Image (cartoon, rainbow, N blue to C red; front, side):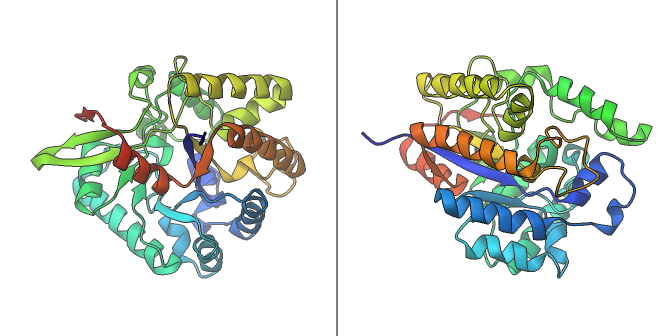
Amino acid sequence: MSKPIASLSLDLDNQWSYMKNHGVDGWENHPSYLEIIVPHILSLLEELKLKITFFIVGQDAVYEHNKPFIRMLAESGHNIANHSFKHETFLHLYSKEELIEEINQSHEIITSVSGKEPKGFRGPGFSWNETLLEILADKGYTFDASTFPTSIGPLARMYYFRTANLTMEERKERKELFGKFSDAFRLLRPYFWNLKNDRQLLEMPVTTMPLFRTPMHMTYLMYLSSISKNLMLLYLTCAVYLCKLTRTRPSFLLHPLDLIGGDKVKGLDTFPGMNISSEEKEIIFKKVMSVLQKHFTLVTMEEHASTVLNNAKLKYITP
């Protein structure tokens, strides 16, 4: 009997974007760790025989020193998607004109550098609004992946504000970062956004634990493993069981710092799990992937979206 599919994606947030979001001086120079993380990730994925979706930040594709590593992702057969141009976690505050420029600028540079045209989008910090969805639909995108149906968003925001060096204006811009408690009631399975003028756009939510709606992405699992690896495995096992029980096909999210620690990248100590060595993170990652592969066939988000569109009768939701 064939296993249900699940998709893997990685938001390729670069070093400067973490610095920018936490108010660390020097981010304007756009320091990069792509030369460290990209070969490392590709090696791991090749070893595990996995293809995933990489959400690329357009600003990174501008710099010559980053271009070879972005091309490496595409040339290795991975799916390329759009993660905005400036990686600002308050896209919902942008005007329509600003959103159009943000999407178009990122789309064009990512396509030019990678050789692959993005068909999926995820807003930084899960930020989105109806206008953004309409722009994506107009541009012919297959799916959006900006929703995160969890109950702990405000708690994550509290931790973020406590550890970040932000001005009052920056805190105001980010006051809805990671969402609201009510986001836990959003649909967990894929659905169509019902947009103006009879348009639709497929939404592929980042999967959280069914029923409880707590995160099950790699960053959260890495945080749990810093407390207890057995606790992390128990939590993951419960999440997988509930996904299978509710017939939820996971969209599993990764970040670069899930795979490298403070021994390889300096100055990002506020990110969860940076006290775990890169070697240990690799072991934990492989264990998590082995659990997921036992129960699911792991594919890119583009393949996941295609399967959903071909086989499922989806709900229509008005933004």
